[in-house]
Image (cartoon, rainbow, N blue to C red; front, side):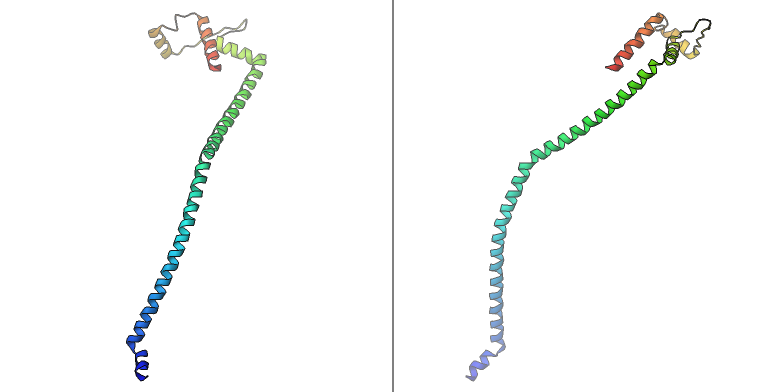
Amino acid sequence: MAVKDRDRFSTTTRLRLLGEQTAARVYRSQTRRQARRSRLTGRAALLALVLCSLIVALAYPIRQYVSQRAEIAELEQRRDEARERVEQLRDLKARWQDDAYAEQQIRQRLHYVMPGETGYIVIDPDVAKQSRTTRGAADRPWYAGVWDGIDKADAADR
């Protein structure tokens, strides 16, 4: 019995028992990890599959939503610009309703003078030199310029 007690308390025996216990603990923890991994892997795969299908299912509607929002923003901007243009045209129409403004514009654009007034047109010497060399606009009658103005105004509306 004394020999068994000695073997039981010897360093070699204790180290061997300690090694076996440690190996058993490591083996148990590895099997638990593997069991967890196998469970998490299946769950992770299912979760990844669900997320991918949601992304695929929602990709087209989200793309459509974003493009429609951009189109709406562009249309709202165009609407605001059109309203601003309408206001400008209303102001211009109101000004043309005033006889004094119409008379001023006729005098300025067509060089009309009232009876008893003397009209003068001052020509810039540089412009006169250019017109003598080109002779395109100087040879035209005055009403050609009026029609050109009407054509330009008509083209601006389109």
